[in-house]
Amino acid sequence: MSGKLEDCLQLLVESNRIPEAALMARSYLPSKVSEIVALWRKDLNKINPKAAESLADPEEYPNLFEDWQIAVAVESRVSGMRGNYPPAAEYLQHADRSVASLVESFRNMQMNEEPLENGGLDHEVCVCFCQLY
Image (cartoon, rainbow, N blue to C red; front, top):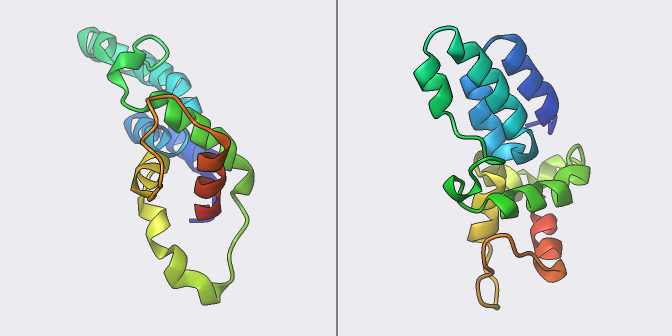
């Protein structure tokens, strides 16, 4: 809620809640997913090496991660806007955004143009999306 995503991710890692950290990174910090998957593999390898091998890293297998390039691009565009809090009077206008991932919000935008292919972002789409955050 406060926009301190990296701090939250670090807290999950330090608390040894690495699977939860991976899921959070997938939704809100896609640029950190590979780093967290590496930690998860290392931790899981102690218990079940086969399960550790089965964890997919988006850098190794981008085809397994739908809209991966979009998620990374959107994260980089909106990262500077975190910590900019709207006035409390505007709460209802922003209440739903805390439960939607970046890609979900991107998909839910209504655009007059044809949908973009995976990985393609243009300036107009990013400007519209950034206004959501």
